[in-house]
Image 1 (tube, rainbow, N blue to C red):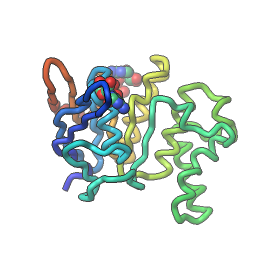
Image 2 (image 1 turned 180 degrees about the horizontal axis):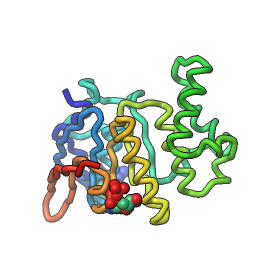
Image 3 (image 1 turned 90 degrees about the vertical axis):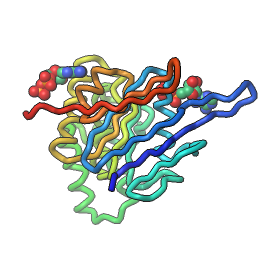
Length: 228
Ligand code: ADP
Ligand code: ADP
């Protein structure tokens, strides 16, 4: 049984100036422990797809299932990391406070919570910045905080929407390697969305390619990762 199942998903935005078919007919599955990339040019419907998967938007047709359950509202066992890292962090909370926030919704002992936070900060290389505030950090480090928050939360699936589009090339390469490490060493299930073909092929075990012209196309690539 797949962890995530997207079946014949279609979304039409209706407006007074006309309807826009943002996604036509997308189907794919993702197993637990997989790193799947969705790639396609700007405007091909990536954000719309993610919003449907995250339960933030109701599809016009088709369905999304997580763990065999139909997604109709934001599932609690999902974590999201967006491109706009700055906006997803609270400036009045320290790095540690930001990572801790979603854990408050889980019933955890103080000790267990601290252990998860320490572990996540170490995983992203920010153990020394725990008491800093996000605005004191570079963009790349802020994105590490957002990733640490997702790691500590231990979601069944981590969704990343163009997470590194706003950072410089070297930082981006470092962060891509961090994502690979989280997947390989921690077995995290990651759905990674990007407009960058190179990035998708570098990261993904499988790549779902979306494009829209002249007609709606979905193509799946299977990538054999060479053994390390
Ligand atoms: P991507 O993330 O790949 O850039 P989007 O999902 O943002 O693609 O957009 C897909 C298409 O849907 C685009 O043509 C966009 O203009 C349109 N679109 C996105 N959001 C809305 C909306 N709220 N209302 C109307 N059209 C929209
Ligand atoms: P390895 O997997 O053995 O570390 P790779 O050949 O996969 O080596 O990558 C070497 C370096 O090049 C990595 O540190 C990575 O940051 C960078 N790199 C390779 N491909 C890409 C890519 N498509 N986008 C960004 N960085 C890349």
